[in-house]
Each structure stands twice: as C-alpha cells, then as structure tokens.
Length: 259
Image 1 (cartoon, rainbow, N blue to C red):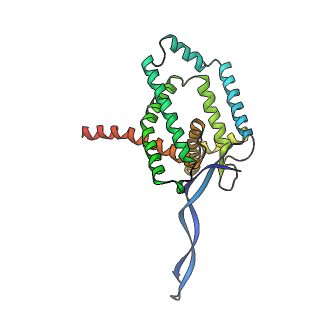
Image 2 (image 1 turned 135 degrees about the vertical axis):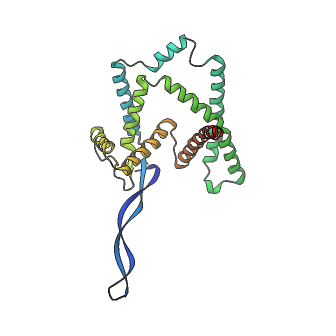
Image 3 (image 1 turned 60 degrees about the vertical axis):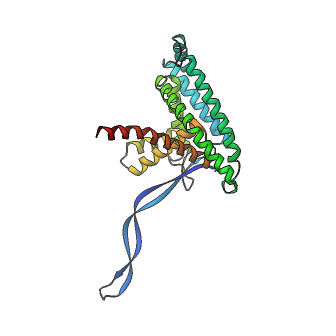
C-alpha cells in the first residue's frame, strides 16, 4: 500500500517504566512504575489507486444526482442567473482574475521543474529560485483564496456543494489509515465505516476526535489541490498557515490600537 502523506499526533497513555528506587533495606533498586506519558501515534493517507479514483468520482456523481432530484439548484443554473444579472464579477474583475490564474500556472510550472530535483541535490541558485517563486505566489494565492471563499459562500447551497462535501467524507473514510496499515475507520464498505465515524463523532475521546479532524483537513486539501508528494503537501500547508497568520495580524493590530 502506497502512502501519500504521513502525520503524527501525541496521545497521553499509561506506560510502565523502570525507575530507580530504594527497597526497605535502603538498597538502590530498579522498580517498575506506571506513569502517564505522551506517546506518538502515526497515521497516513493512503495514495488512491485508479479503482479508488473511479469509485470516488462515481460516488460524487450519485450524490449529485440525489441532490438534483431532491430539488437543489445546480451551480451552472445559479451561475446563469447571476450572469443574467451582470455576473459575479464585472469585466475588469474577470480580466484580473484570469491574469492571476495565468501567473500562478506559470509559477507552478517553474516550481515543478525544481521539484523534480531531490532537495539535497539542488544548487544554491535553485533553492533561492524556489523560495522566490514561493514568495511570488503568496499574493496571488491570497487573492484566489478570497475569491474562492466569496464564490463558495454564493454557491454553498447548490447540489454540487452538497455532493462535494459528501465526496470528501467518502475519501476521509477510505484514505485514513493507522501506521500499521489498518483502516482508521475499520474495514468494510461505506456503511460500515460511517458507523465507526459516527461512533467517534458521538464519543468523548479527544484524541480520536483530533485524529479525525487532522484526517479531514489533510484530505480536504488533497481533494481541492491534489498535492502528489509529501513535499507538495508541506508546501501547501505552509502556504495556507502563512495566509491565515497574515489575515490574523490586522485583527490583532486593531485590538492594539483600541487599547
């Protein structure tokens, strides 16, 4: 089984350790004692096979059909309504958005050339260029993120949005694994695994809840951006974290000014 991305979480457990002690005769001995320690637990995202990709797409299509039959409006129809009213973006905004998309594609193309080279074998010039491309992409990524957030808020209640969220859950159930290669949500079909998911969701175990949250976050990133290696995953997560930190800074400045 091929691994796409690995992560580690810490869990508090009762472990038996050998500790120095003194017996009733005053002699130094080694005794066993149970103590609470943080133990590292490893997990990974399974790299989807071609069969899994086909099944995931089929699941999305089925859920989309269900939503449409239930009467939910589709994205194209809602978009058409907005277009008839002048569109989500005016002509100038659309032109700017197209330019940003073009720039990002060019940046990613240059990065991909460097990514093909093992990080340890890259020259100083290549490392510098990679960093420059990362910095160059940041403002474009922020603009794209803001646009996508605004667009998603508009199309949040469409059939496609519902089917997408269902599909992400499907991938969470089938891509999540423990380090020993056992499925995190147990073996079986969707119904078997969703039962385990609900059991964790309704339970009171903070560690399992945090593991589900980490799986969901990473798999959502994969679903939208399709990083294909650990390096691409780390770069993507680093970019997201930096953008979130930059977004928090103005809020903190405003609070400071009020004081």
